[in-house]
Image (cartoon, rainbow, N blue to C red):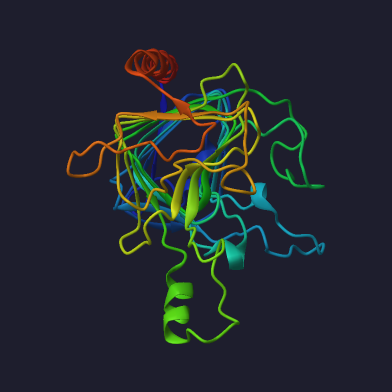
Length: 349
């Protein structure tokens, strides 16, 4: 028997946070969130919980913390304390809502998570995640940080426990590394949209072409972003996108988006039977720090990618270290993805 709680004008509580706090840790619960905009920062660490809204466009949870925020002690908030919603525990299901971080562009706000997905089994369906840099973080963190206090947040001192995550019919928006982390994760039938963060810069350059103060990114090549930045285990599944629409925001420059860059060398990301547009760079995947940097231990690849008109996308200009996946390998990877989904759904029934 699951505890049932309702949030909203006709509910038991007026905020999601109050409802979460009312649930005992060991008690399985489902929280219904009525239509509305809830401006709050959620920390949810319950053993088994499901949070269900009235619809992707109807129920909205938002907050505006960014990594560059200065805290009362003089330190900066940092990436992993910037989340709008932190979900942990054994099993978490989120459905039918939008969760967004409204802090703004990474150049102003820094990294700004919409969701910190930390539960061992995660199931997100019909959910929109909106942000800019680092929209969705999927635990675990890498073993070690590159910058002092770079991992400051809920899991900085805890063991790195692998998570299994499934995203179905979701919409995820962002720009720089906006789906990142060490989870084994499958994305089915999702829309992955990279923001056009170069628009203002391009407009300024067009207005003042002689102004040397107007910079352009990457030696006259506009770079809008990198969709994933994985850091998973070498023997893990990594991130798998199947039958997704992957594209840039309308008006984005061609070849301005990369499918991934490795946050750690043993990263894995694969796209299977996805529909993409011409904003995706011909190199497809980027190195970390330089487009052509070689990562021999990284597993990146795609199979069956097409344009919106159904025309097959040529991968002839992809970076040399990006894997060429054939149909047999694609089926093997897809079968492994199916096993992960079975595990997640079984644990979340």
